[in-house]
Image 1 (cartoon, rainbow, N blue to C red):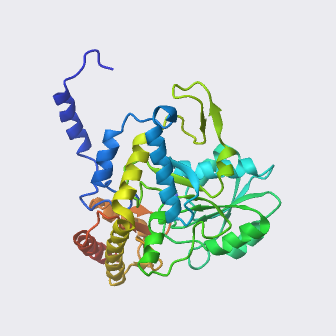
Image 2: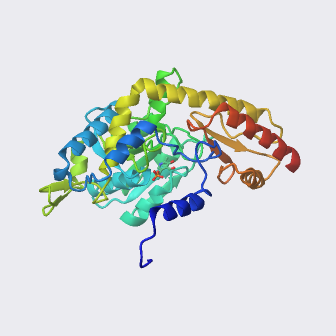
Image 3: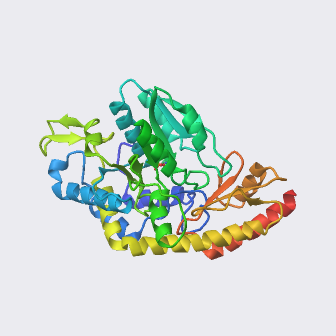
Length: 385
Ligand code: PLP
């Protein structure tokens, strides 16, 4: 640390220089991120509430009320306004919390059945909580294969995880079938809708046929739904919701020394952002269903253009028809890593999976960006063919 303080102007100059290397969402060059530039209104609300600490909620009863209301609104979006939970730091914390609950209510069982497409946060959860992951293969539609789930169930099964909007392709697992299995066999079912939770309900309202995934299904015990992804809230903002309030009890701890008075915490974090919850609440209220529906409608319009464009380029194709605003691009003749390399050289920030490139059509991505991208793809594939 420097001995003497440096003037703000000097530091701001340094910051501008250092951060000029970062990608920006406005540029339309970030093609592989599930987060985007946060909504301006949410940003304003967030900045105004930076000091609010929900780790000591007795000091901030107003903020706590807004967190509870935000959870209620998310619950109503996911077919259960009585669901309980928290606004947490992101999908990783939400998924770990769900596994923590599942472990605490299942005596001596430690096996979690999940698809190979599940997010790596479950590997972290397994490592932290001493769980054994049983990863089942996908069917021809890149969904968790239900037959394999049946085979994987044993006396040690602690939970089943289904994904509604997979990280790689935005695929929705057969959650209705998983719900039936969970109900019949009395197994905890968690749905990771970190991305899809803010997409699927609006796609349904727009008339798309898409699989049920939420608390409407009686076997679903908990859902991850992230406001900092398609909810357009500032980072950090994840959501974890439970159907039954007793589920929160099994991880809650009483803290007696806090200045706001005794409190029961049921989050991994102690000190946690009240600004996040407040911004989420404000944005949910401000945009309403109509606002989010319109955002999803526009994203899907661009997604369709991108998908059609890819189909028309020789040498590449879609890995599957996009169910939501996530597009998977593959090639049978060209090494997909070389295509990704070329795209990155041209400053397109794409995500590279084992057999495909993933493009997420976030609201920042406009038709003009897609046109430019398709032109580059056309050139790259021509050069590499
Ligand atoms: N779940 C899914 C389906 C995801 O795609 C992701 C992130 O990409 C996560 C969970 C983890 O979310 P976060 O990065 O907010 O921790």
